Image (tube, rainbow, N blue to C red; front, top):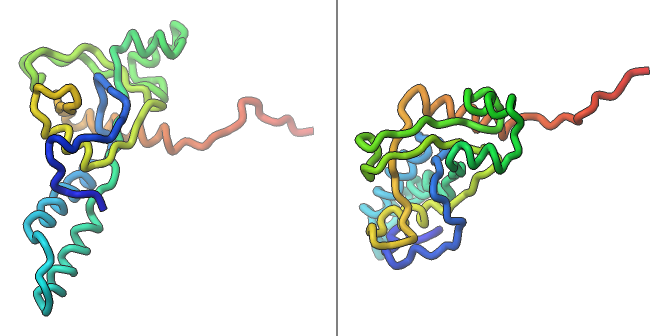
Length: 188
C-alpha cells in the first residue's frame, strides 16, 4: 500500500497536465478514504507484541480496506475547444450545450466570487471519454503542494446538489452503456 504521509516533495507520478478536471469518484468512497487515512495516521506504527498488536492489526486492516488506490478525474476544457476538437456538427453542438449528448456535459461559467482562487472559471465541457485514474495519495500530495509549485492540484469550486448527481449519473451511464453495432442485422 502506498505511503499515507507523502511529503510535498514526493509528488512524483507523471500524469497528464490538466487545466480543468472534475473528480467523478463517488463522494461516499472519498469520505471513507479520508476517514480511513485519518485513522491509519492516528493508530501509527504497530506495537511490539501482545493484545495491543492484535488490536492494532484489526484496526489497521479495517481502515486499509476503505482506502482508495485511485481517484477518477474527468477531463474538462473550454466548451468551444472541446466541441471543435470533437468535430461536432451544429446539431450535436446544441445537444452538447444543453446536456442532451450522451458523451458531453456542459458546465456554466463560475464567477470570481464563487471560485476559490477568485479568478472565475469559463464555461467548460466534460468529455466523458477523456478521464484518468490518479493514485489517491499522489492527488492528495499535489493538493498539499504550495501555490509556488507547478505540479499543484487545486480545488476551484464544488458542484452542489442536484447538479453533482446529474453529472455523476451521466458519466457512469456513459461508461455503463452496452455497445451495439451500427447496423442492425436484417431478418430473412
